[in-house]
Length: 533
Image 1: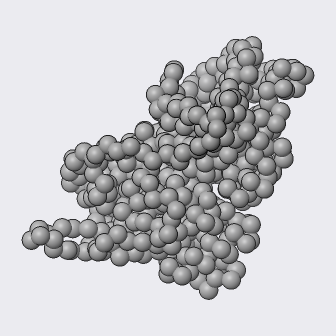
Image 2 (image 1 turned 30 degrees about the vertical axis):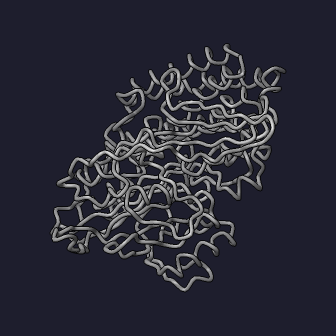
Image 3 (image 1 turned 45 degrees about the horizontal axis):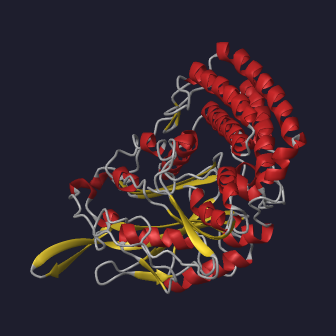
């Protein structure tokens, strides 16, 4: 398989979705970006790592210093599937550089800044070289993912410096700083508003306060155990991340899971989608001063989570997906209660949807608020449910259906207005579609084993997972060592759609009033934790 116009042959990875991999030169790296953009494709993920097969030894001031030869990676989505490109870099002298992609794909900018913080590789010519994840917790020349994960020293603290926010000046312009500490249990993030009166001229975000070192911790774990950490990257997406990680591991080991396990994984994923949409719909109503919606949707979500606990042993279904299959089964006694609850939830959500539609106050707050036009959404790479509300018709379950979605024929929810009302409508439609899928899966789930054995390969291997989570597509890239190095995880990159969507939120709020920001923000409901590994 090739990217048309690029003379590079890609190797197919064994996965239930189409994913191809190739090593490229710097020229091919740049050419590929332009060709993908011309064909209407999009950037899926960009990350950096180190080549574990090569250790460069450099003597500095009579001290032997071990550094790793670095590489930078990117994955693109075209109609054909995912193309994973690896660009090796020289990591022994100076600051390794690679061609900047932000001019072609604006969503690459923050990913490139994170790669610089974690691995010391820099996008040549990037207009924004500011640190992204390093808030002074470690020295500017300390790059966590270049350290030996088996003997990780405590990094020396860095120096706290003022972050150079972009200033907006003019008559009547002033700044409003919000966060990083917020009320309630929301995760930390800083929002700098430039406003005239109540009108927002510009919003600039600074995130990265929740940095947890997950990608380094992954390299210290057994490949067969790391799924538990993957499922904790973002707590509201535990099923989606666990499935994407396990798919990557199964891809690297050429493991085929049993049909029943595939159906049960999809059942868990659609249950997670419904739970999050119910929570969001209530919160959106509450942010528009309609507390009745919060009460009703909270009640429905609580019933939904209790049913998950009864059926699968955990309210959020954490650790239910494991390498090779699933750790839980759907017992016959749980089928009838689950189907009854699906009927109840659908009846009540349809009634609430009618109330939302006819409520003049809600519609006044929702319509035209936080609008992202389809053209802007395409330019900035808006993805997931927020993208589908702006005519970005991408959904892995529909574009590249694998078991059991190939048999279920998922109907994609899509709207073109790109405002809060459209993002609310997408959520309602996805709830109804997921309830239909759950009924179908519960009724037709095949019998058979729940897991397949996984045999780690003797040689070094790579694998990838690609799953449509409730917020959007999740991508996991996995590199494993061979038996000679103890079957270690050399690199595991877990990519959340929030990477693409957080910058779009800055545009969505422009021209709106400050009081509408909580409503616009909730309509995206992006993850702080998921894009801050």
